[in-house]
Length: 310
Image 1 (spheres, one colour):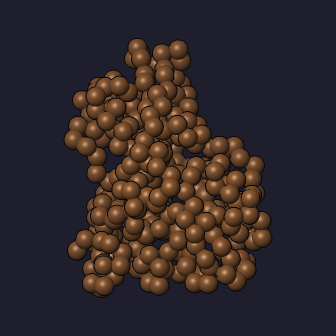
Image 2 (spheres, rainbow, N blue to C red):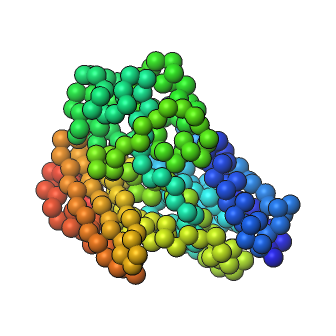
């Protein structure tokens, strides 16, 4: 039994709920006692800066930078991440050691006036800070007005209730993990492909920490890990920036993993979407090859618009 477990996380309600899930699984594994665990809240640059878009201040990596620093210098033993916020590349000596059982990966529409994207009135105003959601919304409904909408779930719901927008979008997983009873309408991935790794919680550790390697092995969900492996390899191959609208969703069925991936222009005027299937043992290769196949199909001006490297 490990003698102590310091779990590092952001301080948002959703991040804390996810850290509690990790704590419960660690205790249930029998490898750590409940009174030997501590949740360490780390304020990140992404949390501190709320008046500018993520693209303008450095991207989603700002939600993990300070947490990874605390992990590297030993202030925490394990870092809990919403995997859609974890960059494809991690600092030397750190690694993704476990993926918890994935929750519903879909996006949801929250609106007092519509239960689907198609039902939104002409010119409706939708609040979202995500380039992927913005691009896919505009590809479906070019008439919509999209406004930047940063903040945690509670902040966005408050803005919606105040009538600042006609609707917003949240991950179904976040709504469920927070126990919210707010009315929401899950969207079919066929029209709104989720972000890579949406709904997945990842555990990052120091790769030389044998205690944490053993703990992560005990609580890892192999099926979710396979799906995440494919999606993260796809993201890494595209080398997408925080401005790049990229969607990816892998599903595992028996010994096979199927991957659906896309890249869109930020204004939604064009997108490239492909699917492929491989053995679960080849999940990483599947992601890389699908990403490469999409890059091959992208004209040079598409690269410039989507801010991808050639």
